Length: 203
Image (cartoon, rainbow, N blue to C red):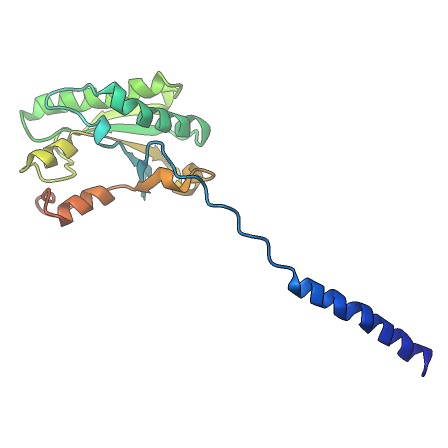
């Protein structure tokens, strides 16, 4: 037997057991899923203007009022402020809306006051006031029909648009359960007949 053949046999004797050991080694277990998210869930959407953040029912407003219940709204406002101060430096449009009760002039003033209330709350949490522009749209941009009380309540709202921003940037590294698609709950309520869509077509 040639020395070359002997070397080959010895290499095979070493390689085959090593291969068997490698095949027998189990793959490492997948990383554990993140713990359940218990914080406020923000409704967001990518729109042409940037990232839309729709503040939830805890930050909606009572009839004729531009103030909200801080004990319920604080967690959401804290969460939005943290995103705006740590994830982006883009400008933010804070936009107030009303239901259809009352005159156009009254609702114009009220919608602007609601936007300012949210802007002031965010500024007090560290968001640079110079980055935020407040606007009021009265009852001209309803989210739902004003024919029901639940619909009116949804229309008394404030939306934030993080201008020229991307959802992927705001959500990078965040818990997957901390966001949901904006208007998904609204659509679900419409589908269940709890509220009616906007006359002439839903949002």
